[in-house]
Length: 122
Image 1: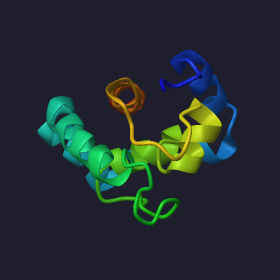
Image 2: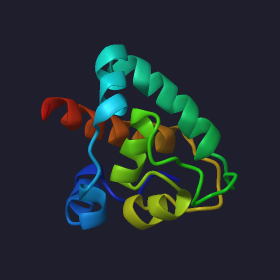
Image 3: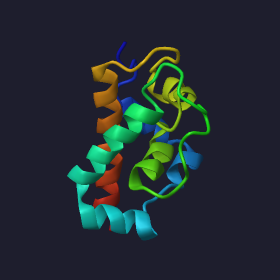
């Protein structure tokens, strides 16, 4: 079950949300991305997504993503990939099933795109 919203539509929705627009990488989270690089952060991000978001019923769903502490966490809130409810509402990835590889890849693409824009605006 792939995302029913294409990435361009999702980013238009995110841009229209005053809540999602308030997120920016700064401080330690920005420094971490700049120091370790995109590939390293995305590798860690994949592990975080696999553990915290990809299961059919993630532990503490809706509260499993910290607000800070890793660039991926900030990116998840900025892109509505922080919990299964936000994923369903913004990206069309339904709750109640474990991610397939296409859904994992889609979430990682969304996160990478947002992180890249954060690097480009610094």
